[in-house]
Image 1 (cartoon, rainbow, N blue to C red):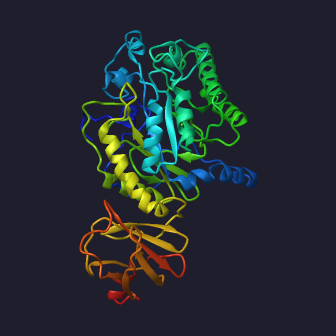
Image 2: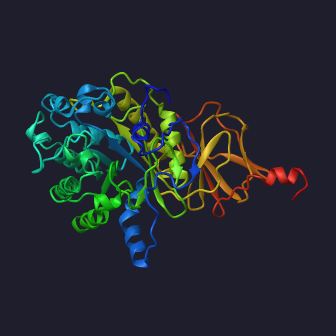
Image 3: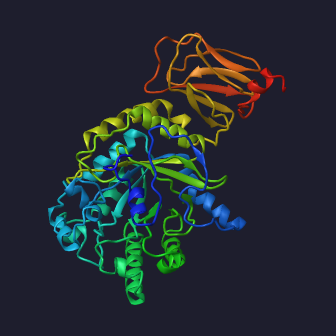
Length: 451
């Protein structure tokens, strides 16, 4: 990533609180612990069953919308502008009066998310700048008492629910506006004041808006779990919202890991969600034209589903709440693909086959979905090493039966149309006799006499 393209994680590196990560358009999945903030504790059978209950919908959903929106949207220079440009807190606070979103902006987001095939939304309730998009008794630095003149979080919640989408709250623990936000690291009285301020916000968010499905903590700088009193924090969260799921960024393991700007599967049995931007910015950046193509977005979504993860894709609305037209166009195209191919993404299982130069795979039970990125037509589509017998194949978009031949070396699909039947990726439904398994080295070993 160029020096003028700063992700949140790059900025954390400058703070000494994280590692820079470069987002590629088409990442390979890495098997590691990712951005996990703490060792995953041993669970009792009861705790495991409760987590599975709470997360069932989330595992089935696979695809969500992230929303970064705040005073930084007024500047239009990325959500870290206050920190990266060294804008004093008092000067930055003046943007709160200029932040005047149009009515019903959140309804547009929710309708866009639904068209895109996204099943849940996660909105910034407070970002690092400290401005609260919700009504709070703790500060006047909040939407109802500043330019918006109303509770933007409430509008978002109502909009998401109107479209049948699950509701998630992003909340940054770090706060550049609050006078104790940095002082808390070295002053115990400041720490106690600031922690109570943060805990009060969470109590308000989880009390005043009905059911909340996801709590997405971010940036725990400058305290550790003990300093944040994170155990007490999570205990309060679950007392107020027994069905909620929480991530791992308050320095506890939480329910799921959060690789950022990369696709990185957690260890076996650990839930994970890859969050990514559509360009190189989270908050609105008017000059950022590094847009991913719909094909890149679809391939990222497939890669997440392959390894049992979710894909949280960000929009950065403009200060009036409108979504940049590039984001709208991308999501509309992805949504059209999801209308035809959603069964290959939602409610899918972890998939063992992964090796093909033409495409990628997802799985549901004994059904293997072969997502073809580079359409050859005719008899030119095959992949090697499938050790499970294929019963049938068809095109997902059209339902057309596809002829095939299978031997110990490969499965070859025959008589394919010259032009790809679907855009930007065509999916073949490959029905197998049992769970599909691929031996990536079988052909190599057999050809050299090792089998």
